[in-house]
Image (cartoon, rainbow, N blue to C red; front, top):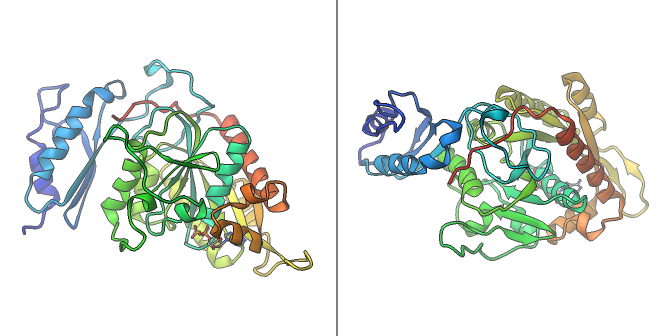
Length: 372
Ligand code: ADP
C-alpha cells in the first residue's frame, strides 16, 4: 500500500472550503500540527472560538476526506482555537475558579473548571499513585473531581482504583466515565484488554487523550486530574499542548537521576507555556513498618532544592511507605483506606496547596469552546 505523506494529506484538505472565506482550509492557514506516522494522521483545524461548536461538521468532513486516502489507517482531527479573550464570549459561571494556562491552540472541554497534569520525567516514580491520591484528597475537600489515565503505555488506574468492566455508552456516542471512591474515571485501560499489546504510539497516543476528553460525558467538574504518560517526548509535548492545562504537578524521587528527568519535565511545560504548579517529592523518607523509624534511603530534600533553584513551588513530600503500595495494589488508595493516617495527611496537604494555587494564580484566560 502506498505510504501516506503530509503533502498528500494537505492536497486532500485543499479540497475543503473554509466556510468563513472564499478559500480552502489549507490556504486559509487553518491546519496546524499535522503529524503523519505509519498511516496515522493527526491535525488541528484552527477556528474562531465563537464558532467552535458550529464547525463540528467541518471537522468531520476533513476527517472523512483524509480517511478516504489510500494508505491512511486512522485520522484524528481536532478543532482548536486561539484562546478567546475573557470577554469574547459569554461565560456561564464556571463551577470553580478556572485558571487556565497553556499554549494557543487547544481543544477545550466545556464544564471542566481546571485540568491539571501529573507528570514525571521517567516511569516508576509514583506518578499514578500521586494522581489518584491527589484526586481522592481533592474530592474529600468538596471538589467534583475527574481522573483521566492518559498513561497509555501502562494504564494502572483500573487496578489501583478497584475498577473493572467496560464503560457504558447510553447514547451510543459518548462514554460514561466509570465511578469509584467519589471520582469520575476514564482510562485507556478500560477500553483495551490488559493482554493487548500496547502499540499506541505517536499520533495514536495523542488522539487517545483527545478522545478521552472529548468523547466522555464528564459532566460538570471542578478539577480534572490527568495522569500523563511518563517522559518528555513528542507525545507528551503534544498532549501538554493540546489540552488546556491550568497547570502541571511534577513528581520526582530524591535520586539525582530522577531529578535530572524532573528538570526535563519542567522545561517541557515551560516550553508550551503551561504553569508548573510545583514539584512533589515521592518516596522521600522510608518509614519502617515495624518501628516507625524514618530513614533517607535515597537522600532527601533534593526535589525541594531543585524547586527552589528553578523558581517553582515545592508542594510537599510523600514517604516511601509499604502501606501506600499495598493499598494501591489492592484497589483502595491510602487516602480511602486510611484517611486519617499520616500518609493520607501528606496527600491532603499537597491537594490543599494545589487547590489554593488554582484559586490564587491569575487566570490567563477562561477556557471556552465546546468541541462537539
Ligand atoms: P508511575 O506512575 O510513576 O509509573 P506508580 O504510581 O505506578 O508509578 O508507582 C510505582 C510503584 O511504586 C507502585 O507499585 C506503587 O504502589 C509504588 N509506590 C508509589 N509511591 C509510593 C510510596 N510513596 N510508597 C511506597 N510505594 C509507592
